[in-house]
Image (cartoon, rainbow, N blue to C red):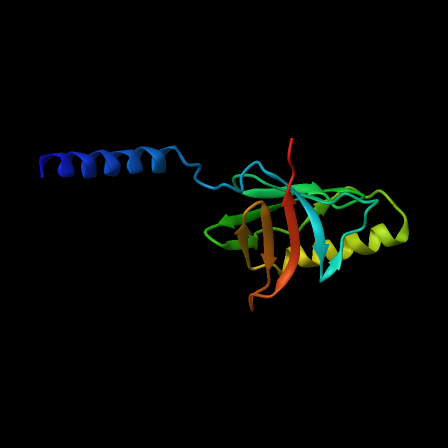
Length: 136
């Protein structure tokens, strides 16, 4: 009986320690690379990234650097400011994808994490975009 109580106490304390060590938002600082947008594969020749920081998002839309103030956490993804971007011109398919990507970010209302994948969701829970965590 005494050993059981001690084991339960140790397991409980270990759980508390591990919970305290976990990052508050596992999205923070991860570089997410777009793999699918609007049900279509992302263009191979235009890498699109999403980086989530404390109160903002940013990255590259395949052509330009972008950023916006945002609330991201606990399944919520919401822009709090318009997206700002550099104004470089790229080939038309890349520009088209960049426009669709900005629209997806603007329409996003939530997200879901599945292993090393980030799923950006609209207000109805539909998939807007899929990302994979960049390794290395």
